[in-house]
Length: 152
Image (cartoon, rainbow, N blue to C red; front, side, top):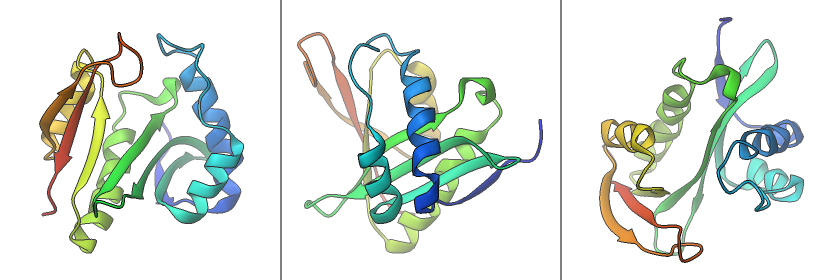
């Protein structure tokens, strides 16, 4: 695999990230629900804390967190191209994001499906702790853990 570069996302990355999101979402068990569109990605690239991973200029991953009125940042998306999963790209993206959040001295939260053991294991290693199980988070059959991380 070629070298992965992780950097602060720029506005011109928005369409590539939106395409990556659509492609990744198609592998989701609930893929009939619409992923975030170009408009949302354009706004997030400009106004959230967001990093992208690229190989030879191609976007292969992204992560974003946005500020909440409660004072924490919500990690809303972590996406890695299916062709590049298992190569540490998600960890690199999280490292960049958490370094930024730690510098701000703010907590962060995220949600995860309780059956997603791989993601939960990664989040545990990164310092996130399960704070709550919300049954029916989206629809009656979709439960989510709320996980929180305090700054280092």
